[in-house]
Length: 102
Length: 504
Image (cartoon, rainbow over all chains, first blue to last red; front, side, top):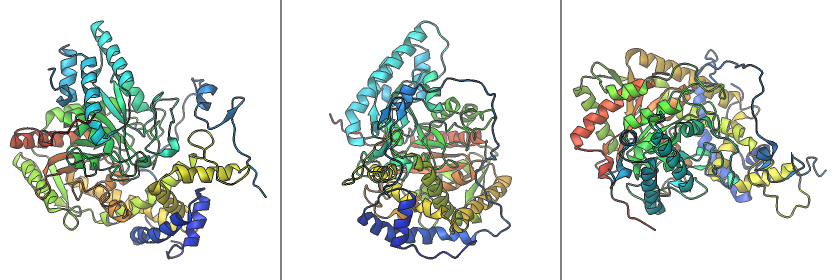
């Protein structure tokens, strides 16, 4: 257990929206700031369920690494891979500038 | 059998097709006509591919005439939930962000359906990225319950369940992350099965929560579900969580339908407060029928169930927030540049595209998941939720040491009016209480219609649960109960559904 759970402020929601790369409107931020604390209060009960001796379970069925023979298999043609791209150029995905404005 | 081909079960159609009493083109045409006439009031489909389905049907008819050996369900049409990739056919996941996306490949489930010669009628409506329990979160408008079109069909797979209930398709594919096959089954009077996690390949299933998602059959009878289960299940090297073992003998189990000596446990925690009286009444009667047929029924307790909903609503949004990060407006999906920004950066374009492309529920869950996974809260939330999965698995293992299958109502309530819980996400989440445990621990579950609630004359579902890889037990028990109920009713439950008005 780390720190005890407290509320979640509007400022937190702004930060989370930034992390999640969603440009939420003011109205959406207001709405989530009132909604999320109620949901979190409900789910916080999981913290009383288990002690440190209980192992975490990430998958319901044990998962092992899977290997296969390194053989060439058919893959998407460039035209198929690019067909749904918002923009493309010379068989490449065309994206906006990736360096920030400042 | 020309007049009401749409009412036939998949098994009946398969037998008639193989006896050449009817052609696949005739069956497909009848269903396409039915969709055209009633889907205006149901909206089960986001996309109908009449031309493609009829071409596939003609191909099967030709191969049959040539004397080819065909799979049992060849020529029986099917509808596919819009969360599975279908090459050359739109796949939107009910989201604006994938508006117009045509996948360049088939999901393994789709590929198996095509290889077996089932004409694909179209893609069914769903809550956006399967997030929701009512199909009201579809960006393309809700699906309506065929029993009462002012009510929800359940969700997220309301489209698949409604299509089957409204006789627009004998078979459909659903996906179930927290009940999205079983709860719509309960609310529409149809059969829905979530197989054991890893039983059906997830390759090409657009992921919401990778450790919970599972595709499965949506049908009107238990035998039809078994036939479809057998067709789509089995190991797939394209899915690293796919189970390499042989598929359980589900069809044989559905044909056996014998509960004599079967040990059945009623889950004590899944009843009482919050469960509608009419739901409890039908559930209790169904259990009495099983007892009268020779099953040994006992009550069992799974104490950690009280933490299951909390664990689910942490694990699911955490995995969803991670899975949906791929929608970055760069390689596919809609790109919406921010208004009033000259030469925006990729990051700004990504943020504005995700704002424009995602609906409220998807945003809510992404933000919740981002919070649960963020530094400082990870152990308290996501870490604790993963521990709950361990405790829950131990409790279920203990229960299955004493009984062969567990039973509960599938949903605490019958179908509620459209709009009723749209502004109260927590209330909607509480409706998943009986279905989510199976996803958390990876066990199979089946919902069977067991009658109508007295207070509203709407369908009630009973859920069977079995241990991992023992999916066949569900089919045996459910087929037995289905027979007992239909003897009592003198027909199917769906034959009591109101006639739908044709809208052109």
